[in-house]
Length: 304
Length: 318
Image 1: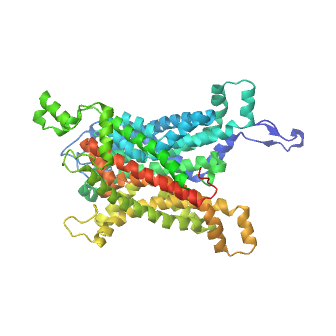
Image 2: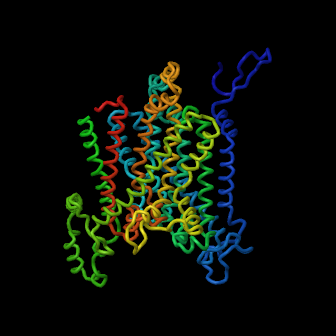
Image 3: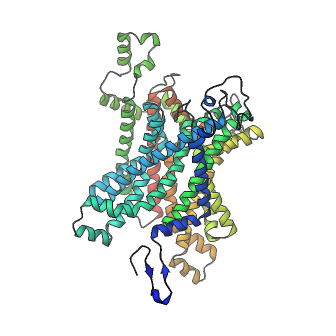
């Protein structure tokens, strides 16, 4: 066998040459074959592009401001998805709101993945007392419903986009650290790590160069599913009035309108479109997560 | 077994204190003067009057002492009084807890009794049409945000078809009767139950599939045991262990994560009470809900551990 990479196996003269792709390419190919994941990626790109480029298409600055009398609440050529109770254009708010929701999801998952990976690698690699202490902390964090900590924290610090990102990041790292710790424990015993240590590579280097690259697959999968759950988290908190604060729109806080039974009953477009966006995004991200798991983590593809 | 339970209890105690200290510290660090919530607004400008209020509620003492006093009272069920209504927090939290447990308990039972059998079915008919359908439904049930499903169904079933009441736990002003309660319960419980059923189904299926491929199952089959006996007596009893873990892991969520769904259906549970506390910045209420939930979560975790240990003889009680 040649080394991993795009080596050629077999005797070239015989014409039986066979190309072997690197593991990364193989995973990519598996992902590209995963039909639902491709649908998911398409939907995510569509929503993200709309959210990011939205203001290029529509001059919506004044559409985000209240306009009390002159716009009808329902759909019209002027406002395709109707307007809300304050006369603001739903479509314009959806586009800007999507930007906020996606931003919160991506940044807080980045934070929680970072903390989780750090804790997991340290616990798994150092073992012993450090491992014990860190894992007990993880037990505590996991044994209490995260959304309640979020509520308390948001009551105290005061809600807002930045607070939301930090708090969600701080309460949702525990599962990642468990996954990473398990992987690190297994890797630590493997021959190539032992070899690296024997030739005098420092602990930090072993972690950075040899362990992290080998646990990146489950971490990516975790982060993908994490984004879906944070979008739901943000939506729920904002719906309760404790997440993103109006007038800044987010998909979640546009649902606040639906807390009123009369809006829920008579003006469905005010809540159905943001709800639809959340569902679409969450399903799409989960499809991609499923595809990534199948592609990257063959062993765990039957059970999570 | 006895010593195992004692050990688990000993672990649970620091966790309990950890949670209460954390929340107390959070609240102590909160900006604003807690005393102002209890004083009449016109007194807030008078330092002497405010000092009197602080002394009256023990707010002038150092934090550790306040924490110990609060905890001492809390453990005797004295959780203080609501800022807005003056009602005793203890009894209110207790009532909310009953409502929450009724809702999430029903949902959890639905999840278990629907999810596990369907998971087994899905596993023994792997790759059949029914398996594909169920797996697809599982995916939906796990990834669909339950409170949005709640909003949608509330709109459809409650407001368009008028089949169920649109919120609350009982009809206001009506004498209590069980049919009325069930009518209020059915929609939120089914929505939460759908999520649990999906989760348990996925794990039951995976766990069953793993067990069904092991050698002892082949042995059992080849000595001529009936398919049903093999599935239930041999396969399921081993497959059930990871399922218990998952049920146990979802219990903290059972207690707390229905917060948003409770808001959608105006279900008077702990979630709704917590949100009220946060909105009113009523810190004693927040603390009260937190401590009661912490106790519930710890007790439930303990029970899960014990059930887990008795379901799996391989676990040593040490």
